[in-house]
Length: 173
Image (tube, rainbow, N blue to C red):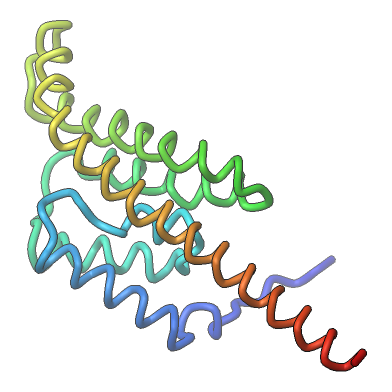
């Protein structure tokens, strides 16, 4: 039987810490509400421990804890899940990122509905209708940061391949 080992280097690697710090700071200063690289960072593989730490730190220092937040945290869990499911194909990642964003919208606002709205169809529809502007900004942030990440990653890979081809051509001449 294979024994489970906790790989601490995946959590405390300097680049992951820098990314987590930048994500946290982006949520605190500079960006409009709900426009954040947080979902994309979770989707594209920020350490789960750091992903949760950023969410909890923001809620502790800025956002506050609230009734129904378990639904929001469950919604956040969709980002790494969808990212993992689509990890082998850029095409699937392009499709799965907005789906993760939509799943987050559905789950987080279910918590808002259950905590603060009249438990009726009218309350349900009102809750989700009032949440649409927040979803628009969340989706915008996810797409800008997520697709931006994909574009940069693709550019770096093409650049690396070009450099390798040039190096190989120099060796042959």
